[in-house]
Image (cartoon, rainbow over all chains, first blue to last red; front, side, top):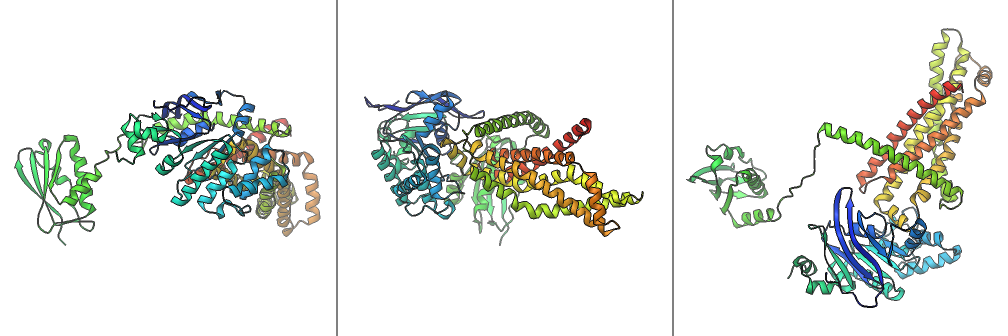
Length: 256
Length: 372
């Protein structure tokens, strides 16, 4: 595989022979990839190839059928419940539609992880919430309910909730789907800025080519037909050097 | 407008030439494909060529017809030759054929037997899932009691408010009417023996031991059980439950336990309220005949014991637990579409009512044999 592994980089996430099934239905098999600290790792592939499913395995919602995913060399699924919780607290996840709790205001949504896992006073939590919402450009929307704001704003509010605990790893499920080009660009910039200033590792599911090249530093291509990964490496590397026509065609919109 | 017609023209043995004439459009009537399959040497055909005749017009209808024609000829490996048709027709036909049809069709209509077998096999799984859910709920309760869970009193109180006071008008109407129904029923029967005053016994014992708990539970399963299923189901669709899980918050702790505790607190109280109103309703009927309120109340006092009241309340505790479980379990097991939410809601109410009736029957048998 065309893995461009730089020396001295700490491996944060590693998939080893990961096989995913939904019931008896095979989604993807035998996935191998490594994600280094500070990477923006792009999970790409055609529709229905199991990108979101891979993400859900990585965040521990689904259990792998075979193989394992290691976080800093440690398996999530083999860990004790306490250890799992500790690992989860270091992750931030944003979902396709934002997945904000609809019976809570934006401020309450962002405050939830803070009030669960920190001993901050409610005044301090309020300040933190205001800061996190300001980071994603939603200052002043604290008391709005998710149903009263636009889809793009919901996604950004979801991001504010995901970064509430300053996570080490940020997961995004199709962040720019359904956004206009300018908002999508702003979200990409935001992701990069957060990565640069907090040193977080980013894992992102997307098939927006512009985003893939703008922010991706590493990635994996999943194929729906052969049900396995075709290639892994940085998007630029895969575009120019992939052995698979399909990967190069995908990354160049078929203009090979 | 001219009728669309076919003219067959034999060119050489395995090849037939078809001339299309008239209007092959949405508004016309197209010739049946049988005309083609009725040809004497249909089995030997290798090529079917089309050309256009006089005043030929077409739209998507023609292409749909050609595609059906192709599907019919496919098993005998017979080719369609469209070179005599307009270029647009050929392009559209090629476009419709660029992606080969999906061969792996889902099992659309499994046989009745197959469905029955699946259904029975599912029952075992469902029983196991139910047991697992009960176990998990018990563990969650223990966690909460040892102050490690994340259920919050503010949530519990707000759910109590939603399920308790706002159900009062409905329960009031229903209980008074049930009391009246019981009284009329008793009055007609007891009058034959001149024992009208015993209508108080019938209404009192009937409400307190049975109808109060059961009817309140039925109403609450439709009102609150269904609402729980819909709330949790929608949260499942919006990935909110996934979001909770990844925040390290257990849905059992945060969503299911507060709802269950709220129902366990409110339903027995509603049951007591329903008992009182039921007896009042019975009294309305009794006093409208020749019994006075004093006689009615005096007779009631003798008829029902503290044990009877406790029997009803104990039942309603159990019913509350069942309604909450059926609702929450249906909601959490909800699929990822809006149709699934509707299904989850129906499921919650149906399962709750089945649980209620079965449990009630079982308890009555038990109480009878224990002499309670």
